[in-house]
Image 1 (cartoon, helix red, strand yellow):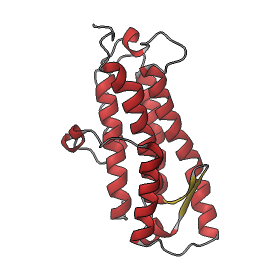
Image 2: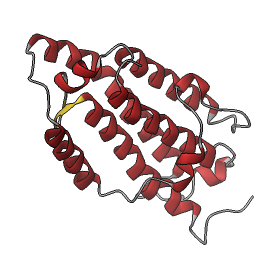
Image 3: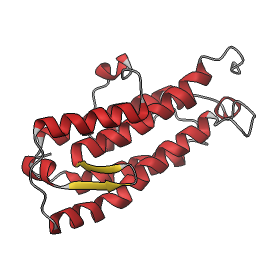
Length: 192
């Protein structure tokens, strides 16, 4: 990747994805569908929502890059980027990223480990890796200047590309915290 700023946020997002897969790939179908309550998102529904978040980002990113290329924005200052990151953090109010993230050594989605994955999750995870590969393909040749000049257009705002990557990571982190970890720590969670 040409941009070190983009790479920093991208690698963090890939690590968060691998962490999520590691937490869920060995769960049984009854555990994935816990709780059996239509009002609460199960672990499986949370995983589907995470893939949908990334798919939406992958679909809108090329359009955003083309549009912002037509209307060249001035480079965002470090302060502007920090404000965008703070806005995203406040929007999702996530806790600190999982401590095990630093232990995960991975730099691109092609190296995401899907071994020993529940067969009912394997197609979803393979699809997720494909989505992440398409995002990486769209951003891998962006220069450092492109990373702070081009913008991503979303319903929640217009962001520089590193902040947009961070936004999708925070959306998924919120789902990890509220839709997966909450149930894994529930006393009623089915045991194997």
